[in-house]
Length: 407
Ligand code: OVV
Image (tube, rainbow, N blue to C red):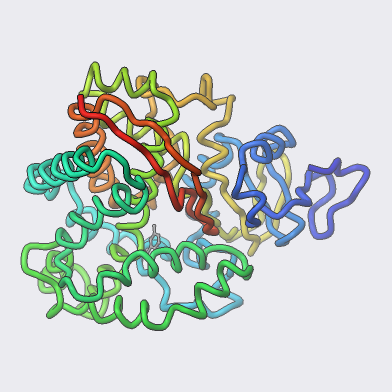
C-alpha cells in the first residue's frame, strides 16, 4: 500500500489508500496473504491502481457488499469486464450474472435441483466411491494428491450425477479453468485461456442439450423444470452450463485444499482421525482457510458510501473473499487451520442471494472424502516439491506428491 497523502492515486478519490501491486499477478498468487494483510490494515476500501477498480478486503465490507445486490449488482458481470461497456466473452450466465427479479426465478430452479432432498439419494454412492478411491491410493502408497485424488474423485462422481456421457469429459476441467480465468483482467492467463477455448466451448454447448443428459441426473432435472414452466426451454441449457462451469473445478480445488491442510497440519489430521464426525467441518475450514474461490467483482448501480468513502455509479468493486476469511477482526487465530472452529459465516461460498447454489454437493463430496481419509489413513506425508497452479480466480495446487499409510 502507498500512503494516499504522499502519492495521490490516479483515478481514486482523495483519501482512499491504493495498491500499486497487481493482485492478478503470479507473484501475488504465489503468496497473497501478506498483501491481503497490508490491504486490510490500509482501510475499509482500497483502490487498485493497476486495473482502476476499488477493492474491499475486510470481512465487514466484503459481507456488506455481498448482501446488498441492489447497489452492488452482478448483471454487469462478476469479473473485471463491465458488460455495460464490453461484450461478454460468452453468453452471460442467467444465474451468476443476473440480478433480481430475473435471478430469483433461475435461482429457485437450481435451489430445487441441488436441494438437501436431492442430495439424499447420492450420499451412499458418493461415500462408496470416496472409500474405494482411498483404498486404491493406500494400495499405491505414493501418488500425486492433485490429479490422483483432488481431480480423480470429483471426476468419478460429479459428471455422472449431472448425467453427462463419457465421451469428451476431458474438456470439463479446461472449460472450468477458462471460466474462472475469464473473471480476471485481460492478462496472459485470461487471454491464453480464451484463445484456446473454442473446442471446450463447443463441447459444453453440446452437452447442455436435453438429449445428451441421462435421465435422473441434475441436467435432466433442470430440463424437467422447463416442462413445468418454471424456466423456458431456451433457458434450461444455460442453467446446465452453470453446473458445468462451477460444479467441478471448484470441488477439485476445495478437496485439494483440504488434503493439503491435513498434510501440513498433522495434529489436525490426528484430531479428525480420533473423531471422524469432524469430517464436514474439516472440509469447511479448508474452504475458509484456503478460499478456493479467491475473489469476485460487483458493479455499483448508484453512488454509494463504503467505509466513509463515496464512490460513483458504474464502478467495479473487487471482493477479496480470501482476505475476509482471514480477517482478524472476525476470526480468532485467523491464520490457523482448526477443524473444530465455528466456521459459519465464512464467505468462501459467498453470502446472500448468490451464495453458492451447489454448496450441498460440494460439502457432500468434501465430507465423504475427509471421512474416508479419517477412517482408513494413519498418516499423510508430503514427499516432494509442491507446485502451485495459477488462475485469476481459483487458488490451488498443480502437484502435491504424498505418501500415505493405512490405519
Ligand atoms: C459461481 C459460478 C462460477 C462460474 C460460472 C458460473 C457460476 C455460471 O453460472 O456459469
